[in-house]
Length: 343
Image (cartoon, rainbow, N blue to C red; front, side):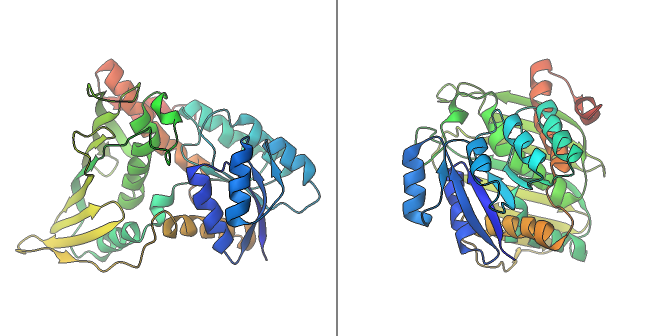
């Protein structure tokens, strides 16, 4: 079977999705949705002519009898209620880019809407499908270096928000580093360590040269449910244009070391003098891991496999973001249960 998908949002991320869906043997683009006619024209030129609409409602009304099998929503995380409601009413499965909403309460409302209609809602957490992510999980599962005990996660980047190939809305959103970038890292912590956080102490701030209206720097200390401690520092406004990444996990009998967010994984046992590299599969930037995400969505919708990256699960990662912001404002440690209470 081939799943016919509406692709809504034709910006930077939407073009990645168009490429991945076009390459898939089990999915096809049924229609484009974007309010910008120039975006519609560019998508048609690059990925083939399709019906194009300014809004999702217009597309759903026009294609109601066309056998639409799903929605890929790649627009900014602002005002998604109407789009989720429209798909839930029609029983259309949804794959929505992260973050699902800009608060846990907002995202939880969308999750409830989909659940009440028994409609699948998957969140686009593509970093879970990186080869390096899967290899790290396999390393921990093998027992080669023992069990994770504490970790340091560092992400440093000078993100020029004015570049034409980047989305502009983060320039003015509240806590852009947390909501747009750290959300990926926090989700990876939960996924790789197989544990949810219990508490966090955090501080966010903006360096004097920042082009972002809100804080572009984050420092956080998480305590996970297993008792392990994760020390996190992330910035979108580094003082140097060269990016840096290090995710080190100290285990009972060694360490894992990741030096690139898309690869470069190695490990060392306690008394090794040099780390041992781990061979990883080939990776095409933004395409390989997005293809894995699409395949998981297709496996659920077409084959009945369990839903991965569910909206309900995503609420915990969003709670980590919200807890960091609250901790910074109130200058105190925040329990994740405070954020998730009643969700």
